[in-house]
Amino acid sequence: MAARPFLKWAGGKRQLLPEILSRLPSSFARYHEPFVGGGAVFFALHERGLLGPKRARLADINADLVNAYQVVRDRVETLIVLLGQFRNEEDFYYEVRAQETHTLDPVQRAARLLYLNKTCFNGLFRENRQGRFNVPFGHYSDPQFLKPNDLRAASRALRGVAIEQSTFDELESQAQPGDLVYCDPPYAPVSRTASFTSYSAGGFDDSAQARLTAMVQRLGNRGVNVLLSNSSVPLTHELYRNLHVEQVYASRAINSRGDRRGKVPELLVAAGPLATQLAARSLAIPMSAPAPVALTAV
Image 1 (cartoon, helix red, strand yellow):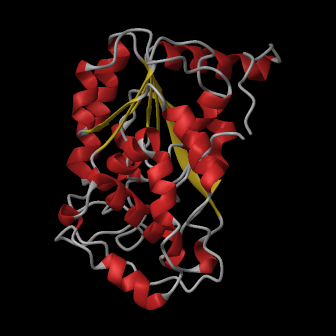
Image 2 (image 1 turned 120 degrees about the horizontal axis):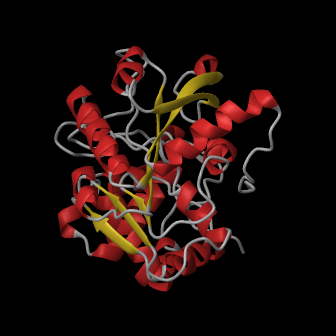
């Protein structure tokens, strides 16, 4: 069975994979994701045989998310047994949601996150300012929060992968020339009410977006291949003015209103050798020259 994301995540990249994969280099040293989220790009690269042993580092600031990845990697059978005891019932959901995570062991914390992720309304991970998960029950008839074979496939893909809780800033000391970095930060909001940047209690404001941009530029100057995705808004166009930028269109995967789930513009931003490669390709396409061979998306 193919490995694929085992969590739904705001801003997940499964439906944008063809655009992302077609822009990545076909070879690189080590792979880094500092905002792993659902991990769609990681799992796609794994399925293509591009991630050998100990050649990937996945990170995120969200402690519960990182713990879930570590448990799926290291203790998947225990996790499967525990999840089998959970029920798709509203009262049970709110009992689980009310649990204090610091009182749970790592497997219990991972089971709680997977269960809430699949049974909560719209599959939206959201915490309040106190760091408490606060999404209501989803009332789904079959949320499938336990898919043993999917979890086992994800566990096999994660073997040997470094999985760490960290801020994105720590990437700078980890990435080396020739590595590939994919950054999928919380998106800059398209409006004051359309933001998913509070996916953790700390949020991700304009200053964090600016710090990330500066780091991407520095990594690129050191010879690191960087690809970054974000929303297409005035802030990001200004931040990325000195980088290679391409606009693509993606469907909104998570929105509380059905009439706001159409195609929206997003930006794919490159730095380092990858930016040079993509710039050359974009110049060559109008002249009908052959484009570089792209990775095939699932």
